[in-house]
Image 1: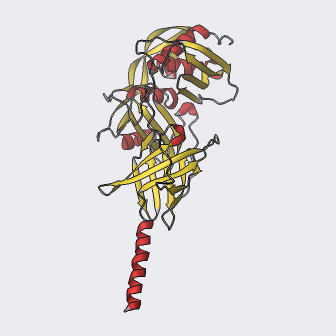
Image 2: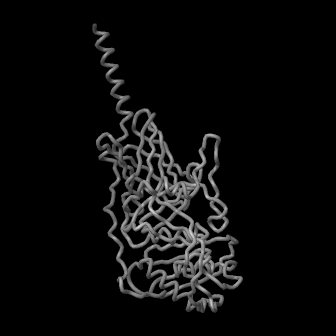
Image 3: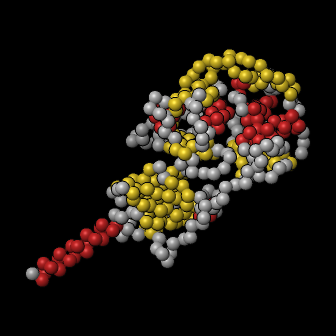
Length: 377
């Protein structure tokens, strides 16, 4: 009988350990080393609500902004967390004290987490205050702007960034600048010189007024720069062009109200399962259609969704040669088990609830009267 009691106690002890090893809830922390080499402390807090797992991620060294996960699964000791900014996948150790895994935002990067205790937990800073915005009635120009030739040979713009009050364009052509400044697609720009797409520039600028500008103020600043440094003059006309019209899909939109504060959207591309994933953050529908017609699609995009507000969403698709100015992103390595992602139109409707439909419609075009190569700094 004594041996039987000891055996039962041992069984219960082992069972308790096994149950504990499968408990994924709690605070987990670890250090991520991104491509720039600057370590980032990451905290992943996992909880359970009505039997459903939830997760919030904080990057302490980037201000601590909390990002709520859109999906959390835990099965066979494998944790998978999907966020608008990237994905995490890792394997829980048998003792339940650590997770060996990777952060996937572009190329996977190792991110191993350990279970935090009261003694070891990193302090999560308070969420950053909303940025100070430029006055809504302000009409800013660039206080300082540098324009330098970009000789990388890349055929497309490599980025348009706003960090605080610093505005940056990398490898932008005259066509890119006009498209951004006047919120048009390349096919809406008529009569440009032969160097309008060949010559490419890096631009860095700071506005001449306090606060972070909104998108309309940024476009106004670029219009002034084009007139001052490129001597651009033009007139408007109407042409019937093939366009894409954006509407809400038959099953309704699948967008999430944004988690961020601020007047500007963010767009990013990273490898996805069987294709590429587009992340859309803090975006209005006007922001989204502007991005799509400027960098992704080969014709104007007209918003007819009637959706207001700012949203976060993402979708994974397989691009074709008509997109990204004929230079679509390279797909990640595929295996026989990898299912090819749908095309852009199918993915957008299935994953975001938005429908793109090709139509011919009269649109405004910009006819260039005069333009010069930019003046030296």
